[in-house]
Amino acid sequence: MTRICVVTGANRGIGLEVARQLALAGDTVVLTARDLRKAEKAAAGLHGAVQARQLDVSDPGSVERFARELAHERVDVLVNNAAIHYDTWQRASGADLGVVQEALDTNLLGAWRVTQALLPLLRASEHGRVVNVSSEAGSLASMGAGTPAYAVSKAALNALTKMLAAELRGEGILVNAVCPGWVATDMGGPGGRPVADGAKSVLWAVDLPDGGPTGGFFRDGRALPW
Image 1 (spheres, rainbow, N blue to C red):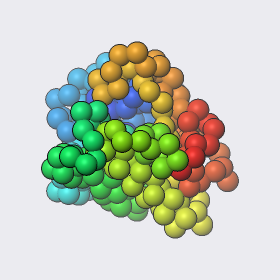
Image 2 (image 1 turned 90 degrees about the vertical axis):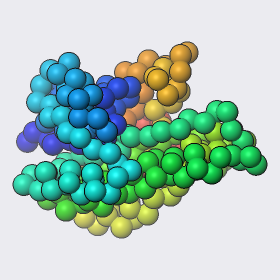
Image 3 (image 1 turned 60 degrees about the vertical axis):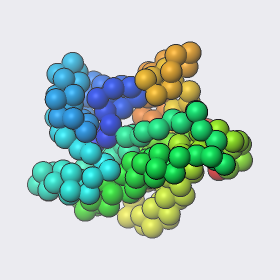
Image 4 (image 1 turned 30 degrees about the vertical axis):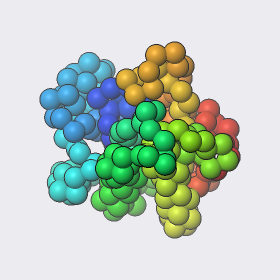
């Protein structure tokens, strides 16, 4: 059965590559971006069944509208990829809390909103998967002083992952956090691993079999410390 896969923040970078690979594999991809024109441009460059939709994960109204548009379908896979503010210029002691709030609203609450809104459609799937694109920057085991808005938001996303996984395990919906590694994207900057490698790490979690791991934090299929 062809899967229906929603990818947030998919007009560029890792999200776009994940959408590309899913479409090439024969899945139906719902490619979302805050700007519909950017989503449509990105979708037009892909081969396969790709639908462009507007979605601002930080806007509750946008999330509700998006969920209504999909109300007639099931959703098999949700990749919460949308993220902002890799704030290398800040330290926690003097951080602009407005920037921190914006990061939390997209990186944590955005994923939370979308998951809640699409949960009825994920429950309609026989093989529901939620993949939260996180970062080792959110690992408490190795966390340092830098990127406070980004790191705290990703640590919180990891916590949400564990909670949702524990709640949904009995329904067969697998929920995992994935660090794609340092990837050469607009956010990550030059010098990182190829985007295809980062996307491969995400797709590993998308393609987990029934009974596979849930509530974990992984990179390249290997567990990372929380």
